[in-house]
Image 1 (cartoon, helix red, strand yellow):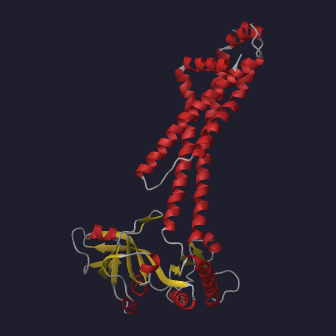
Image 2 (tube, helix red, strand yellow):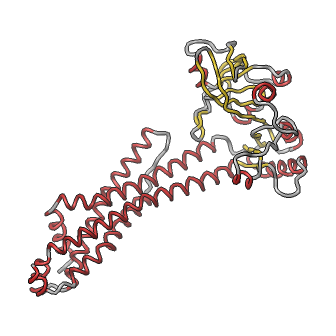
Length: 405
């Protein structure tokens, strides 16, 4: 028997019972669709995170309190970074162009009858240039605001829209933690960053944050949550990282483990890539379990088919069909079942990815490698799980088969 004839017979056998064939294929359809969709969505999330970090600029560095090891052990980090550290970096590191200290807290924001919790960022005038933000209306914070601990605030565009729809916010009074602040400016829309809405934020003088909102919690000075730094250019980033590390080690009198972490954009991108890549692999592995379940379903239904077709197998062997012919016949049926399920599942998975890309910020894309891998794996699963039923059918004794039928 040639392969073409075996293929025709396999198709005819499978289409004779369409409902059973469809239900058997369903496991492979779900498995392939899940694997392709999870890989596509995972890659989309990785691409989105990379694009957002790249938007910060290639010459941006961040200094945060606590060593990288300490950050892995606990979320309650020591208050080791202070405003004086930021001032020292700005004045003593030659490869640095701008430095902005930031102190952040989630606090209640009140205007009229509206009340919401928002991110309050105490910062300095350099924040605009370092983080590439712009003011849409009014003005940003000045050094005079910091020197006098002025109770002034610059609103993110989302807060301005929600609180002052149809009104001019400039000159209005808002309350942060029951302390009144005068609105002096509105920021241009910046969009979301890693799921956090940057337009839902309020910027106030760093000194005012410490004196009237959060208080000082470090014995070494005005502690800050993060120091954002811009190097003079991309080429000077490694030098800036080295100089900042040495300067802070000297200032903090460090002998062993650092009590701070300096990260560049590339460092953060590497971490994000590792995390999102691991999550993508984990999701794909979980989804691949359904492929295994589909393979077991194929083996089960093929064993049933062998039992139902015992007389047919006996007749074919009685008139000269070799064991190889029977083996090939059942193997082709199993592979056709899994391959067809793989193709349909691929189409469903690609459709799911396109829907996600259309209705979410994820730039989900279809990976040709994932498609080829999923289809080839589903075909291989059919081959592997079809071996046992095919061998059982091939080993049947024709006389016993005809008698049992």
